[in-house]
Length: 78
Image (cartoon, rainbow, N blue to C red; front, side, top):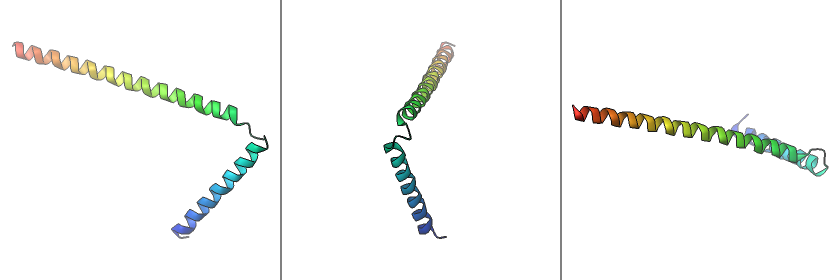
């Protein structure tokens, strides 16, 4: 199977899945609101965790810089 055929099959599969999803949503068999709410909730949780990690890294870096400045001043004093 060459690359062109593989990409065409992927595209065709995506079109079929999209069509089936559209049919399911329009006929009311798939309730999108709870799914979207769960997805957004998970995204917010991930964002909060990432922000916590960034803030933690900033604090650690600020501590390291402060310690380096103290050591530098101690060396200059000697």
